[in-house]
Length: 231
Ligand SMILES: *[C@@H]1O[C@H](CO)[C@@H](O)[C@H](O)[C@H]1NC(C)=O
Image (cartoon, rainbow, N blue to C red; front, side):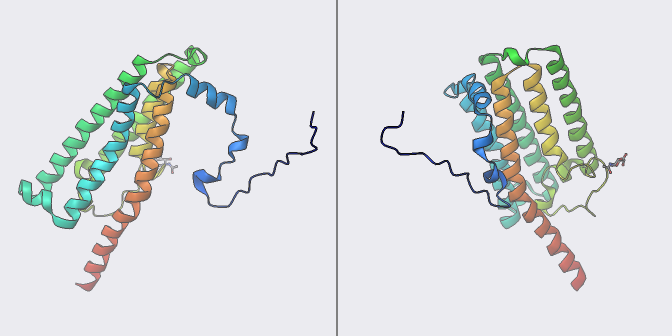
């Protein structure tokens, strides 16, 4: 009963256009489901925190290293050549990615399974996602080569032209989305709510990396185009 006559008027939230993630009307998100997923995940578990840090650290690390190289040629000078420098950084990035996968697996094993996901259908959906993700990752590596995959542009090792063949005709960043699909597949196959949450962290991290890296790489190629025109 409302004795003082006050009424609560629910004003619908104003959504602006082009707001990206901010443009999600959170009042319409199914909160019981969100609560349930988060309720199944122990975010204070150190193994969860290690996995989150590993996920965030990787793109941070390779962007800092690559931009430092691009600005100062520091890695090239340190290792005696752009190719060796690029191969070394690529190898380091691969090791960091192996560690990231390991820490995600450890976090998943440490926490509960979600009964709702423990079905054969979800298991096969996860397996299909892992196949799809692996196809995207492997074919984009084959299309780009080692230096094209591991930031060669920043070392002055430029591609002759933009790769537009499969899988780049399907998505602009097949490596990132393929890797995300792999993690989601792994989480589903293990019926792991913490795996699903960590996959979301991976996806958001890659989305931020794409926004950060895309214009920079385009600029490197624009500079080459201008330089060639002058010759
Ligand atoms: C992408 O290219 C492959 C082969 O190069 C082709 O089979 C496929 O249909 C193309 N996909 C799109 C969406 O254009």
